[in-house]
Image (cartoon, rainbow, N blue to C red; front, side, top):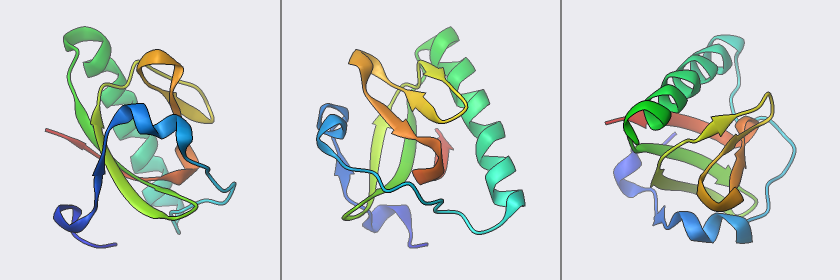
Length: 97
């Protein structure tokens, strides 16, 4: 994984235009478990404080990042404002700033 500074930042409104493959981007169970724990924490912060996080994810064309609030989480995706979502299996990291 590259440093997040070199990853293009997109606006959350653009997420609904992206296509996401079904494959998992992380390689080991520990990383997957850590991602879930961080997503739960980020979701709580989003609901309590409207706290924004930086999500590094991968669509069919490559790695991108978005700075937004996570409103909810299902077992398969995170939900953002205005019905936008990102599949959990396509998320590399969540940075709580």
